[in-house]
Amino acid sequence: MIGASLAMLLVLGQAPSSSPTALVEQLGSPHFAERERATEQLARLGAEALPALRAARDAKDPEVRARAAVLVEKTEALLLTQPTWITLDIKDRSLTEAAEVIGEQAGIKLALMPENSPAWRTRVTLRESSPLPFWKALDRLCAAGNLKYNLAMQGSSRNREPRLILSAGKEAFPLPTSDLGPFRVQLTNLNFQRNLAFAAGPRPSEQFYMQVQVVAEPRLWVSQGGQIQILEAQDDREQSLMLPSGTTATRHSAYFGMSSGAVVQMQAHLKRPVQPGEKIKKLRGSVPIAVATRKPDPLVVPLAGASGKTFRNDQVSLSFQEVRPNPKANQIMIELLVRPQGGSGVATQTLGGDGGQFSLPRQDLHQQQIEVLDSKGQVIPWYPTSFDAEGARVTMTIAPPDGVAVPAELRYYSLARAATEVHFEFTDVILP
Image (cartoon, rainbow, N blue to C red):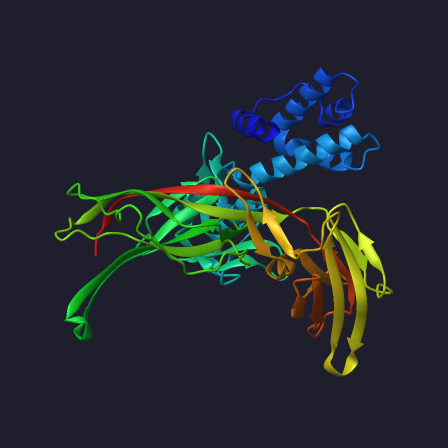
């Protein structure tokens, strides 16, 4: 019930009259009506209320703790499916400065490559009367600065800061694109194949399928949560391109699991008419997506003396079985037992929401949730050398590169997560 009303409140953007801290205190009111009213008003605040709500999860009053925990989870999940809004008020600034302004609002690094190019001193003006979703704001920057973004290099920098690489030159042939919230769906290929198998008669066979990529804002990680649903497909002769009911329509190009980046690719079959038109007049569908991002408050563990100890917060417990240096190989091995608080220790993460639930392998998520830092705060690369799914035991190998100090601490980030349907629509696409 809270989830349904919260979605509407976030969309409407209604503002309560009290501060988040005062409203959190009212969650423990002896009057039920006042508790309900405070819950609704905190829901309207959305992201603004999250700091106070997160702190309230440690409150003495069990009613406050329970309501705060529900609101945190619901708000974080809903915000994952909302776009980042960018205010464009950039006047006569260099491309480097303009990218910094947009990146700062989006919480990511827009990196211009190659660094220190004279082209980045080009001055641009970008102004809009109302905020734009991140992808639209990025399009404005690329158009003004003759730039293009490289999704193959999207991900995290060495310090785990989400980033997107921009380079000089516009795309020669822009991909058909459909945006929804923080997601951008791009049609990358239409493939038609006709085969003649002589051993079968000869008997001809045909395949006609589309390939799309779902791109999330760089602050997010995504995975495919199910099959593509083609809702409408017809060419410019009004002929249907949809397969007959009951026919399998999806080709999978990736496993169901949380990827390490913000792009997931997939394919779906279509039907090609005997005498097709020149274009696809409309192609409409949806993709189930699981989406996640790090929460801002990690469990921080000093590595010195951690062997044999357990550290925990309200989300997870980390038991350090052994921290073993290997001076000859300049490596450190850590055997770690990771268990969710209050759970059975099964090494999966469940993504919930109105769109369904998907189980994700914890082995993949560990790479996103665990980072190791030296005493200077630099992130040190690590890789898993073994993984026991039954007991959630992970063996980590840390290999500090030259110039990096000895590993000093480990940080474990819990994830905010959600499941959603990403709808897309393409029009006037050339048929192969």
